[in-house]
Length: 71
Image (tube, rainbow, N blue to C red; front, top):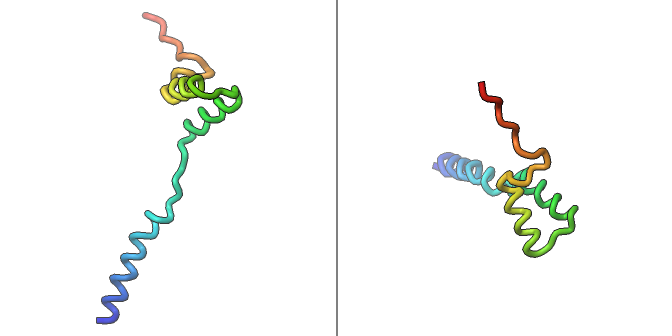
């Protein structure tokens, strides 16, 4: 009986550990967009607009992808 209780308790701790120990991570894209806004010293509405474009891939430093030539 004691073994069963100990086993159930150990299983519960193992199942709960990864969930509570997992740190919240920022997406690399969010970090890049925040860095770009900070480097340009954007604030307020300009920062919000920049972040919206950046997160939507509309503000790519490489520009848009070239369209394939028609055959």
